[in-house]
Image (tube, rainbow, N blue to C red):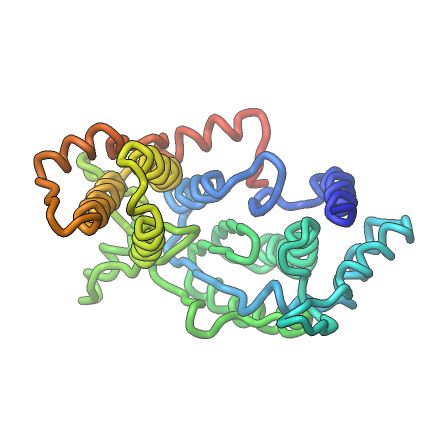
Length: 346
Protein backbone atom coordinates (compact mmCIF):
# COMPACT_ATOMS: atom_id res chain seq x y z
CA UNK A 1 0.00 0.00 0.00
CA UNK A 2 2.82 2.42 0.85
CA UNK A 3 4.49 1.64 -2.46
CA UNK A 4 1.29 2.37 -4.38
CA UNK A 5 0.80 5.67 -2.56
CA UNK A 6 4.38 6.64 -3.34
CA UNK A 7 3.98 5.70 -7.00
CA UNK A 8 0.84 7.80 -7.31
CA UNK A 9 2.59 10.76 -5.70
CA UNK A 10 5.50 10.46 -8.14
CA UNK A 11 3.11 10.12 -11.07
CA UNK A 12 1.32 13.33 -10.04
CA UNK A 13 4.62 15.21 -10.05
CA UNK A 14 5.80 13.71 -13.34
CA UNK A 15 2.46 14.39 -15.02
CA UNK A 16 2.95 18.10 -14.36
CA UNK A 17 6.42 17.88 -15.92
CA UNK A 18 5.56 15.87 -19.01
CA UNK A 19 2.19 17.43 -19.83
CA UNK A 20 4.10 20.41 -21.22
CA UNK A 21 6.10 18.06 -23.50
CA UNK A 22 3.58 15.49 -24.70
CA UNK A 23 2.18 16.02 -28.19
CA UNK A 24 -1.44 16.96 -28.70
CA UNK A 25 -2.21 13.80 -30.68
CA UNK A 26 -1.38 11.61 -27.64
CA UNK A 27 -4.50 10.80 -25.62
CA UNK A 28 -3.89 7.68 -23.57
CA UNK A 29 -3.59 7.84 -19.75
CA UNK A 30 -3.31 11.62 -19.59
CA UNK A 31 -5.16 13.98 -17.23
CA UNK A 32 -8.33 15.39 -18.75
CA UNK A 33 -8.24 13.09 -21.78
CA UNK A 34 -10.29 10.03 -22.63
CA UNK A 35 -10.81 7.57 -25.52
CA UNK A 36 -13.72 9.55 -26.99
CA UNK A 37 -11.53 12.59 -27.45
CA UNK A 38 -9.12 10.42 -29.45
CA UNK A 39 -12.02 9.01 -31.48
CA UNK A 40 -13.34 12.52 -32.15
CA UNK A 41 -9.91 13.74 -33.26
CA UNK A 42 -9.52 10.81 -35.65
CA UNK A 43 -12.98 11.22 -37.21
CA UNK A 44 -12.62 14.98 -37.60
CA UNK A 45 -9.10 14.60 -39.00
CA UNK A 46 -10.23 12.15 -41.69
CA UNK A 47 -13.22 14.36 -42.50
CA UNK A 48 -11.44 17.73 -42.61
CA UNK A 49 -8.00 16.80 -43.89
CA UNK A 50 -7.01 15.29 -47.23
CA UNK A 51 -6.84 11.73 -46.01
CA UNK A 52 -6.87 8.98 -48.64
CA UNK A 53 -4.87 6.26 -46.86
CA UNK A 54 -4.99 5.05 -43.26
CA UNK A 55 -2.23 3.25 -41.39
CA UNK A 56 -3.82 1.00 -38.78
CA UNK A 57 -0.87 0.02 -36.56
CA UNK A 58 -0.37 -2.20 -33.55
CA UNK A 59 2.80 -2.60 -31.48
CA UNK A 60 3.54 -6.21 -30.62
CA UNK A 61 3.71 -6.88 -26.84
CA UNK A 62 4.48 -3.25 -26.13
CA UNK A 63 4.16 -3.23 -22.33
CA UNK A 64 6.45 -6.24 -22.02
CA UNK A 65 9.03 -4.94 -24.52
CA UNK A 66 10.08 -1.62 -23.00
CA UNK A 67 13.87 -1.44 -22.82
CA UNK A 68 14.81 -0.31 -19.31
CA UNK A 69 18.07 1.20 -20.46
CA UNK A 70 16.44 3.43 -23.05
CA UNK A 71 13.63 4.38 -20.65
CA UNK A 72 16.12 5.51 -18.01
CA UNK A 73 17.90 7.63 -20.63
CA UNK A 74 14.61 9.22 -21.69
CA UNK A 75 13.65 10.00 -18.09
CA UNK A 76 17.07 11.54 -17.52
CA UNK A 77 16.33 14.20 -20.14
CA UNK A 78 13.72 15.85 -17.91
CA UNK A 79 14.33 14.54 -14.37
CA UNK A 80 17.43 15.70 -12.56
CA UNK A 81 16.56 14.33 -9.11
CA UNK A 82 18.57 11.12 -8.69
CA UNK A 83 16.26 9.93 -5.90
CA UNK A 84 13.26 9.88 -8.22
CA UNK A 85 15.27 8.10 -10.92
CA UNK A 86 16.44 5.54 -8.37
CA UNK A 87 12.84 4.91 -7.24
CA UNK A 88 11.70 4.35 -10.83
CA UNK A 89 14.65 2.04 -11.43
CA UNK A 90 13.58 -0.06 -8.44
CA UNK A 91 10.00 -0.27 -9.69
CA UNK A 92 11.16 -1.40 -13.11
CA UNK A 93 13.39 -4.13 -11.68
CA UNK A 94 10.98 -5.28 -8.97
CA UNK A 95 10.18 -8.43 -10.94
CA UNK A 96 7.03 -10.55 -10.97
CA UNK A 97 5.74 -13.46 -8.89
CA UNK A 98 4.18 -16.36 -10.77
CA UNK A 99 3.00 -19.49 -8.97
CA UNK A 100 4.90 -18.37 -5.88
CA UNK A 101 8.21 -17.98 -7.77
CA UNK A 102 9.87 -14.60 -8.20
CA UNK A 103 11.61 -13.73 -11.47
CA UNK A 104 13.47 -10.60 -12.46
CA UNK A 105 12.17 -8.44 -15.32
CA UNK A 106 14.89 -7.05 -17.57
CA UNK A 107 12.41 -5.31 -19.87
CA UNK A 108 8.79 -4.17 -19.86
CA UNK A 109 6.70 -2.05 -17.50
CA UNK A 110 5.44 -3.52 -14.18
CA UNK A 111 1.96 -4.90 -14.77
CA UNK A 112 -0.67 -3.10 -12.69
CA UNK A 113 1.72 -0.50 -11.29
CA UNK A 114 0.41 3.06 -11.00
CA UNK A 115 3.48 4.43 -12.79
CA UNK A 116 3.35 2.03 -15.77
CA UNK A 117 0.97 4.07 -18.01
CA UNK A 118 3.04 7.24 -17.57
CA UNK A 119 6.33 5.41 -18.19
CA UNK A 120 4.87 3.87 -21.34
CA UNK A 121 3.77 7.32 -22.54
CA UNK A 122 7.27 8.70 -21.89
CA UNK A 123 8.83 5.86 -23.85
CA UNK A 124 6.55 6.35 -26.86
CA UNK A 125 6.89 10.13 -26.63
CA UNK A 126 10.58 9.87 -27.46
CA UNK A 127 10.45 6.79 -29.69
CA UNK A 128 7.34 7.64 -31.73
CA UNK A 129 5.63 10.98 -31.05
CA UNK A 130 8.54 13.36 -31.49
CA UNK A 131 9.93 11.43 -34.45
CA UNK A 132 6.55 11.09 -36.24
CA UNK A 133 5.80 14.79 -35.76
CA UNK A 134 9.24 15.67 -37.13
CA UNK A 135 8.82 13.24 -40.06
CA UNK A 136 5.52 14.65 -41.24
CA UNK A 137 6.87 18.21 -41.17
CA UNK A 138 10.17 17.29 -42.82
CA UNK A 139 9.44 14.49 -45.30
CA UNK A 140 5.70 14.27 -46.06
CA UNK A 141 4.56 15.71 -49.39
CA UNK A 142 0.90 15.80 -48.36
CA UNK A 143 -1.13 16.12 -45.19
CA UNK A 144 -0.66 13.65 -42.34
CA UNK A 145 -2.80 13.15 -39.21
CA UNK A 146 -1.78 11.18 -36.11
CA UNK A 147 -3.89 9.92 -33.20
CA UNK A 148 -2.33 7.75 -30.49
CA UNK A 149 -3.94 6.20 -27.43
CA UNK A 150 -1.34 4.33 -25.35
CA UNK A 151 0.25 1.74 -27.67
CA UNK A 152 -2.58 1.92 -30.23
CA UNK A 153 -2.17 4.53 -32.95
CA UNK A 154 -3.76 5.36 -36.29
CA UNK A 155 -2.46 7.71 -38.98
CA UNK A 156 -3.99 9.24 -42.08
CA UNK A 157 -2.03 10.16 -45.23
CA UNK A 158 -2.88 12.12 -48.34
CA UNK A 159 -0.50 10.15 -50.56
CA UNK A 160 0.15 6.42 -50.63
CA UNK A 161 3.87 7.03 -51.23
CA UNK A 162 4.12 8.98 -47.97
CA UNK A 163 2.37 6.19 -46.08
CA UNK A 164 4.57 3.44 -47.49
CA UNK A 165 7.77 5.38 -46.85
CA UNK A 166 6.72 6.25 -43.30
CA UNK A 167 5.84 2.62 -42.53
CA UNK A 168 9.20 1.37 -43.76
CA UNK A 169 11.12 3.96 -41.74
CA UNK A 170 8.92 3.40 -38.68
CA UNK A 171 9.87 -0.29 -38.63
CA UNK A 172 13.54 0.68 -38.64
CA UNK A 173 12.93 3.26 -35.92
CA UNK A 174 11.13 0.77 -33.66
CA UNK A 175 13.78 -1.92 -34.17
CA UNK A 176 16.38 0.47 -32.76
CA UNK A 177 14.43 0.74 -29.49
CA UNK A 178 13.39 -2.90 -29.12
CA UNK A 179 9.86 -2.53 -30.48
CA UNK A 180 8.12 -4.25 -33.39
CA UNK A 181 4.93 -3.66 -35.33
CA UNK A 182 2.58 -6.63 -35.30
CA UNK A 183 2.79 -8.04 -38.87
CA UNK A 184 -0.82 -9.26 -38.93
CA UNK A 185 -2.47 -6.32 -37.17
CA UNK A 186 -0.64 -3.53 -39.00
CA UNK A 187 -2.30 -2.57 -42.29
CA UNK A 188 -2.23 0.24 -44.82
CA UNK A 189 -5.71 0.65 -46.32
CA UNK A 190 -7.39 3.04 -48.74
CA UNK A 191 -9.80 5.07 -46.65
CA UNK A 192 -11.26 8.55 -46.79
CA UNK A 193 -13.61 10.93 -48.55
CA UNK A 194 -12.79 9.76 -52.07
CA UNK A 195 -11.83 6.16 -51.31
CA UNK A 196 -15.15 4.66 -52.48
CA UNK A 197 -15.15 6.56 -55.79
CA UNK A 198 -11.48 5.85 -56.49
CA UNK A 199 -11.88 2.14 -55.81
CA UNK A 200 -15.03 1.96 -57.92
CA UNK A 201 -13.17 3.56 -60.83
CA UNK A 202 -10.51 0.84 -60.57
CA UNK A 203 -13.13 -1.89 -60.44
CA UNK A 204 -12.58 -2.66 -56.76
CA UNK A 205 -15.07 -3.16 -53.94
CA UNK A 206 -15.97 -0.97 -50.99
CA UNK A 207 -13.17 0.59 -48.93
CA UNK A 208 -11.79 -1.59 -46.14
CA UNK A 209 -12.60 -0.84 -42.53
CA UNK A 210 -10.32 -0.56 -39.49
CA UNK A 211 -10.75 -0.90 -35.72
CA UNK A 212 -9.69 1.69 -33.17
CA UNK A 213 -10.59 1.83 -29.46
CA UNK A 214 -13.45 -0.65 -29.72
CA UNK A 215 -15.08 0.80 -32.85
CA UNK A 216 -15.01 -0.34 -36.47
CA UNK A 217 -14.58 2.73 -38.70
CA UNK A 218 -16.43 2.72 -42.02
CA UNK A 219 -16.51 5.09 -45.00
CA UNK A 220 -20.18 6.14 -45.16
CA UNK A 221 -22.54 8.81 -46.43
CA UNK A 222 -25.13 10.82 -44.56
CA UNK A 223 -28.70 11.09 -45.81
CA UNK A 224 -27.83 14.31 -47.65
CA UNK A 225 -24.89 12.60 -49.39
CA UNK A 226 -22.08 14.10 -47.33
CA UNK A 227 -19.14 11.91 -46.34
CA UNK A 228 -18.68 10.86 -42.74
CA UNK A 229 -16.82 8.22 -40.77
CA UNK A 230 -19.40 5.86 -39.31
CA UNK A 231 -18.38 3.97 -36.17
CA UNK A 232 -19.96 0.73 -35.01
CA UNK A 233 -19.06 -1.58 -32.14
CA UNK A 234 -16.36 -4.12 -32.92
CA UNK A 235 -18.25 -7.42 -33.18
CA UNK A 236 -15.85 -9.43 -31.03
CA UNK A 237 -16.06 -6.79 -28.28
CA UNK A 238 -19.84 -7.21 -28.12
CA UNK A 239 -19.60 -11.00 -28.09
CA UNK A 240 -17.01 -10.89 -25.30
CA UNK A 241 -19.21 -8.60 -23.19
CA UNK A 242 -22.26 -10.82 -23.71
CA UNK A 243 -20.25 -13.89 -22.65
CA UNK A 244 -19.21 -12.02 -19.51
CA UNK A 245 -22.85 -11.13 -18.75
CA UNK A 246 -23.91 -14.74 -19.34
CA UNK A 247 -21.34 -16.01 -16.83
CA UNK A 248 -22.43 -13.43 -14.27
CA UNK A 249 -26.10 -14.33 -14.72
CA UNK A 250 -25.30 -17.94 -13.86
CA UNK A 251 -23.91 -16.77 -10.52
CA UNK A 252 -26.82 -14.37 -9.92
CA UNK A 253 -29.56 -16.72 -11.16
CA UNK A 254 -31.30 -17.09 -7.81
CA UNK A 255 -31.14 -13.46 -6.77
CA UNK A 256 -34.46 -11.56 -6.63
CA UNK A 257 -35.55 -10.19 -10.00
CA UNK A 258 -35.30 -6.52 -8.88
CA UNK A 259 -31.71 -7.12 -7.80
CA UNK A 260 -30.88 -8.74 -11.14
CA UNK A 261 -32.67 -5.92 -12.97
CA UNK A 262 -30.71 -3.20 -11.20
CA UNK A 263 -27.44 -4.93 -12.02
CA UNK A 264 -28.35 -5.50 -15.69
CA UNK A 265 -29.52 -1.90 -15.95
CA UNK A 266 -26.10 -0.73 -14.78
CA UNK A 267 -24.49 -2.98 -17.41
CA UNK A 268 -26.60 -1.44 -20.21
CA UNK A 269 -25.95 2.10 -18.96
CA UNK A 270 -22.20 1.45 -18.87
CA UNK A 271 -22.25 -0.07 -22.36
CA UNK A 272 -24.34 2.81 -23.67
CA UNK A 273 -22.08 5.41 -22.06
CA UNK A 274 -19.18 4.23 -24.22
CA UNK A 275 -20.69 2.83 -27.42
CA UNK A 276 -23.81 4.99 -27.98
CA UNK A 277 -22.25 7.29 -30.58
CA UNK A 278 -24.03 8.64 -33.67
CA UNK A 279 -24.46 5.87 -36.21
CA UNK A 280 -24.17 3.06 -33.65
CA UNK A 281 -27.65 3.01 -32.09
CA UNK A 282 -28.51 -0.27 -33.82
CA UNK A 283 -25.52 -2.03 -32.21
CA UNK A 284 -26.51 -0.73 -28.76
CA UNK A 285 -30.08 -1.92 -29.35
CA UNK A 286 -28.77 -5.34 -30.41
CA UNK A 287 -26.71 -5.59 -27.23
CA UNK A 288 -29.78 -4.73 -25.14
CA UNK A 289 -31.90 -7.31 -27.00
CA UNK A 290 -29.33 -10.07 -26.63
CA UNK A 291 -28.89 -9.25 -22.95
CA UNK A 292 -32.67 -9.58 -22.49
CA UNK A 293 -32.57 -13.02 -24.15
CA UNK A 294 -29.80 -14.12 -21.79
CA UNK A 295 -31.81 -12.85 -18.82
CA UNK A 296 -34.92 -14.71 -20.01
CA UNK A 297 -32.94 -17.93 -20.32
CA UNK A 298 -31.44 -17.50 -16.86
CA UNK A 299 -34.85 -16.85 -15.29
CA UNK A 300 -36.38 -19.93 -16.89
CA UNK A 301 -33.59 -22.08 -15.53
CA UNK A 302 -34.51 -21.12 -11.98
CA UNK A 303 -37.31 -23.71 -11.99
CA UNK A 304 -38.45 -26.63 -14.12
CA UNK A 305 -42.10 -25.72 -13.59
CA UNK A 306 -42.13 -21.96 -14.08
CA UNK A 307 -42.10 -20.42 -17.56
CA UNK A 308 -41.51 -16.73 -18.18
CA UNK A 309 -43.69 -15.48 -21.02
CA UNK A 310 -42.22 -12.97 -23.45
CA UNK A 311 -45.02 -10.56 -22.55
CA UNK A 312 -43.77 -10.54 -18.95
CA UNK A 313 -40.17 -10.44 -20.16
CA UNK A 314 -40.99 -7.34 -22.21
CA UNK A 315 -42.34 -5.65 -19.08
CA UNK A 316 -39.21 -6.56 -17.13
CA UNK A 317 -37.02 -5.24 -19.94
CA UNK A 318 -38.91 -1.95 -20.05
CA UNK A 319 -38.86 -1.63 -16.25
CA UNK A 320 -35.18 -2.30 -15.62
CA UNK A 321 -33.16 -1.79 -18.82
CA UNK A 322 -32.60 1.77 -20.08
CA UNK A 323 -33.55 2.36 -23.74
CA UNK A 324 -31.01 2.23 -26.56
CA UNK A 325 -30.36 5.81 -27.60
CA UNK A 326 -27.42 7.93 -28.70
CA UNK A 327 -25.81 9.80 -25.82
CA UNK A 328 -22.74 11.26 -27.56
CA UNK A 329 -22.74 14.25 -29.93
CA UNK A 330 -21.26 14.18 -33.41
CA UNK A 331 -17.44 14.21 -33.32
CA UNK A 332 -17.02 17.63 -34.94
CA UNK A 333 -19.37 19.28 -32.40
CA UNK A 334 -17.52 17.99 -29.34
CA UNK A 335 -14.11 18.40 -30.95
CA UNK A 336 -14.86 22.05 -31.71
CA UNK A 337 -15.97 22.61 -28.11
CA UNK A 338 -12.96 20.90 -26.51
CA UNK A 339 -10.39 22.61 -28.74
CA UNK A 340 -11.79 26.14 -28.61
CA UNK A 341 -9.00 28.45 -27.46
CA UNK A 342 -6.38 25.71 -27.40
CA UNK A 343 -5.24 22.87 -29.64
CA UNK A 344 -4.88 19.33 -28.23
CA UNK A 345 -3.97 18.18 -31.75
CA UNK A 346 -1.09 20.59 -32.25
